Length: 305
Length: 261
Image 1: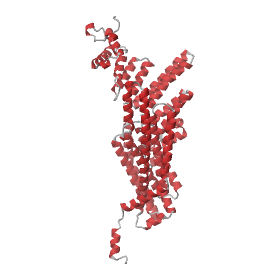
Image 2: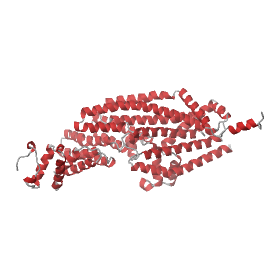
Image 3: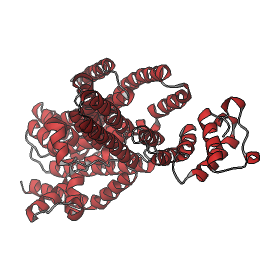
Image 4: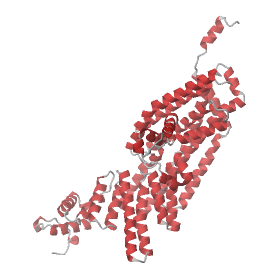
């Protein structure tokens, strides 16, 4: 059969430029690979952090332990998912290059975009499973502390206030906003993963990728300050020289505003967050993910392997 | 090589365009979050000093709430083990700055300063002049916490309730106490007693006797549940003070009647 034969032409036309199936296959393999690397063992650490924290709080007797458990657990979830996202994404490309898997994959009719998308989807799936597992464990711990708090109210608060206080605790624990906040933690982790993938697409070592990604995430938390100092120096109360102003502009433009994904801090306090805000944060997160994948592709498309 | 450079240039250009496009969206969303009273805290130099290097980095890393909780625990330990009110105030200042929507932080900070701190001075300071002055300073610190608390948590009835109690018990100011309880009574999910206390303390506020009497009378007529001894007593006192004729006075159950004039 020659290249010009009708069956070869039919085969070539049947090959799509982009196939969701191929990306899904890479995602599945990435997830399997991550599971084999025992990434879910971190759950043991998460469980130990929660149990340890509960024991410490039980030893100290003061008010607000339920909210404290909520804050600490959400904080732990936030850190664990972010670290998982950065570390898992940073090692994907270097590992595939080292194992020569990348050459085998790209020798097949798989585009580099499909490869990157599949890798990100695999990490996102792993993050989703991890977030769900942590949420289950978090809910169990929270349920236990809710019971403790209610028992404590019944034992100490004057009778007129008991029902109101118990209702307040019940209404403020397992709220839709809380689960929305956990969703934002997951979204933040996927944004971190996409950012790391972008850095990894031009980096030459995984250590460089991890350091640069973590620095960008850290810088991302001061973006609101940089933005206000640049856009409104009078209100920010700072006199910004030109070189600093340039630096602030670079931060504002190139770093993601990670503070927008930190609404979970206020959710633990019982603040109601409107669904519109969740929607806007989700849209912004999706925008970041799309752009980072696109830029990762642009960096990776012409990279000599 | 030229291709790789081209890819990088286009990539950076895409990031630049996205960075410019996202700017108004992020500014708007940040403003919206601040309007909703989310993310109202500010990173300041004093935060850096008080939270320490690790705490400051943790705050920058998005762990504001856990850092605030840990500092609150440290404040609790400073009280329980060392009775260090100065250190406690530092911790409470930073906790409340990090989590201004956390009612409990404000409540505990105010309670420790206005009640425990002042009581500690009362027991330890021998000089009466210094003792009185320092106790008043502690009351003011407590008041300051609660005033900032109601500014940051405007829907909290319990914080206004605490403020009312503080004015009543420590400042002996029935006018301010009545105003605070009245504000508490306007907040959602408040308990009924806040309305009653607002009216009862208003009765002791010079120049507001008629207004207080009308409020007490409204509560009296609303339900027999409101016929608590303090309310009935205030009604009788005000009826006499305002010179209300005996035939127009309300019925008071026998056991709650005051002695005749």
